[in-house]
Length: 279
Image (cartoon, rainbow, N blue to C red):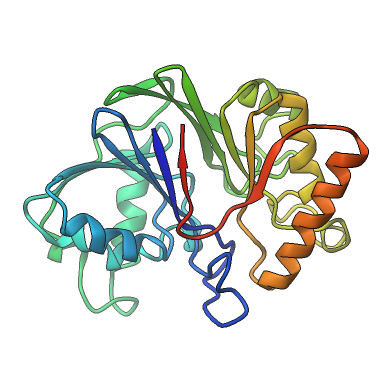
């Protein structure tokens, strides 16, 4: 399984000279399974560059999973090139009622006056038939959802293939239980022993004092989850739009000090645009 990060910025895209190292595009992650199946997670602004690459390849079928429908996770969809080509078949998946909700949200953001082209301009074959209420088989992998602790809800995912597991929990507030969200212990069990965890870590402790209830975790809280779940690799995800490369570097250094002080060995990093991870 190969995971490629196309966007890891939170809340809004932040292009510019201060975000070159970690990237300014909002959430989009590509998962390539060993059998060739392509799974995309979220359609933030990062999906635009991914789409250009997919059009040049021979693949013509893919799965598009959504964690939730906030703007920063949808806004790249109208610019996703494969959606405009007849040769592509796109299976859209999300929560248990994806057919009724995701299709409506994607169509709505392309209605006048928000976008010049309607959803009907997209010629790909879309499949909104099923959500993911429980474990599903997608290609050679199983995908298991878990409700996120986030305003308006959402789902995180565990993707398992060939004995390896990747857990993706963006937009998940560990220190505040939103409606439908789970307790910290539930997330620990969900992540336990995973080979790779990408978890929301938008806030520092200082910022979080004024942001509790906004749906995002602190760096230290996400780190605590990773350590308690004994994951093998852990990446900070959904970087704050106001954090520069220099500030994220400082966060990484602080986490490394914390791990050293606690004598904890953990393969740790801050997610960056373009990074490839092999499981």
